[in-house]
Length: 396
Ligand SMILES: *Cc1c(COP(=O)(O)O)cnc(C)c1O
Image (tube, rainbow, N blue to C red; front, side, top):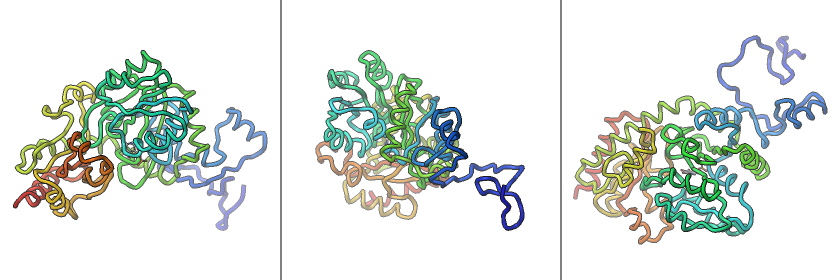
């Protein structure tokens, strides 16, 4: 025991002695951890004692976040990564080998698509995209060397639903791993393990952390041995999360249920409101009865919807520009989702700009098409902002 300058006792880690303790998880930025003896290190490495050594291999703030998301997903021992793409990489690069084949949903997150199109083939892993709403088309893509199917529950930005139950039955029958990116749905509206998924992953950056100030991912398998392989790969490849991002995410997770329910209720109200506006030609929201996957949404989403709404303005690029201009200072025109504030994205000029105009038209992403990630604003005021901006954009 040492004494600090003021004469009070210090613990071995240099903090003052205290018979009470903090109610908030301390932020632990330490990269290295000191041990008592070589024997103590043996105990730690051989699993007889709990402890940290080097933060790339794990640290207290990541462990706290993992434990919270484990509980939400009904999982155990999940791995927190430095981003959602870190989690996607841990699955695809940590579990697949040269010669394997993987099938991905044809409307996956843009960077996941890029990993499938560019990087996996470079490493000798073959990939095919298929429509996850159509089990027969996924089945037709299976080859003898197929190992896994990666899908999102809700597609971006058209909010189509994957047939998760059908895909789970297919994977079980054919001995494949079903991987579900649960970022849009979150465990509040969908728990993949309850529907037969083998692996669940998240961009925690989005709704779960919820304030656009923390970049993190999470991945877990039902089979602990697979989780361990992904953990080892993520330590080796350096997919480590920063303690500060974990600390912020823990704070976000404390209010996750409340935020999700609020944003979801406002999104449902906004969808109905938009459908009643002159100047709006189409509204997409999964639990509305005019959504093409309404029945699937009612069956899969546990009575919930989501915080995302997509809609089409009557007009083209000029009206879209006018809408974004009218929204300035009231909604953020920014390519993210799940923030505390409502954000607006224009797929044709951002997330889906690499597609040909024909493919975008096929998917319904016209120049007037916007995706809204609904935030926590006062609902009535938010609906009014949309009315005002649509009127300003489509008045001619
Ligand atoms: C954002 C996102 C990702 C990637 O997450 P990052 O935290 O940005 O790396 C993966 N999947 C989905 C569905 C996403 O929305």
